Image (cartoon, rainbow, N blue to C red; front, side, top):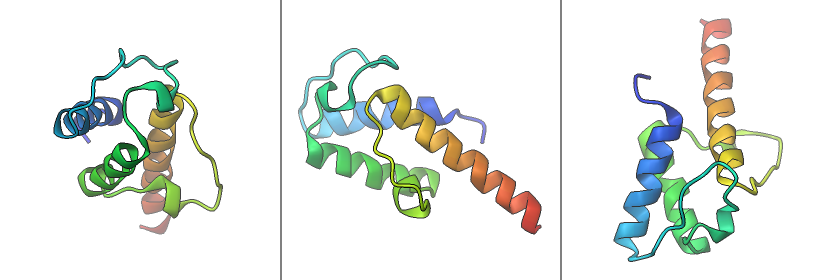
Length: 93
């Protein structure tokens, strides 16, 4: 994937915020996700859009139930899911 997962997630957060007319806090790795400016519905929209964009939903694809606290945690969940998917495709292929 030529564009980083992080840049895609940041872009989608900005897009959801614009669509939902929400003001965002500065998007830093240590920002608490629930304090970023998106409410729970907007975060659900974000996860759905990321699933479409990345063809990846780490929250339903994984057996480990983990809810990220910070934006950095959220990004790492997606990055790890992508690494796992790439590893699985190499092992099975």
